[in-house]
Length: 132
Image (cartoon, rainbow, N blue to C red; front, side, top):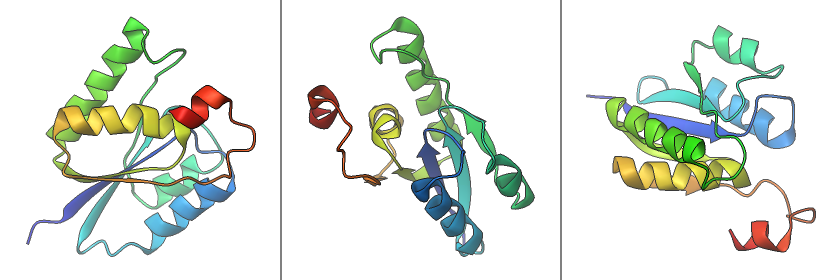
């Protein structure tokens, strides 16, 4: 039986509540059934060595600035290509920016399942960010 590939997309890999929940999930996922992958908008932070020790491939999805910038759009398309090539069946986004990058990428790639988490209450988000 082929394993289900799950891509977890997050902003960065610094220690935080949502980041630690993701690492805990990665450590405890049934590797006989699931193949986890990590994508980070910034591939930096204290959790990167932990994920390396867990043997989970981690890529950077370097979307910077506004999402409608040509470079950002190219990165979204590049990420969609990666999702398609890796046959990702589930994309799990962890925060606002990973939602804004991951959801359109998954749609372009034809990923059948997208799970989004809201890991904060949104108190510091602007009105535009809340609408997004």
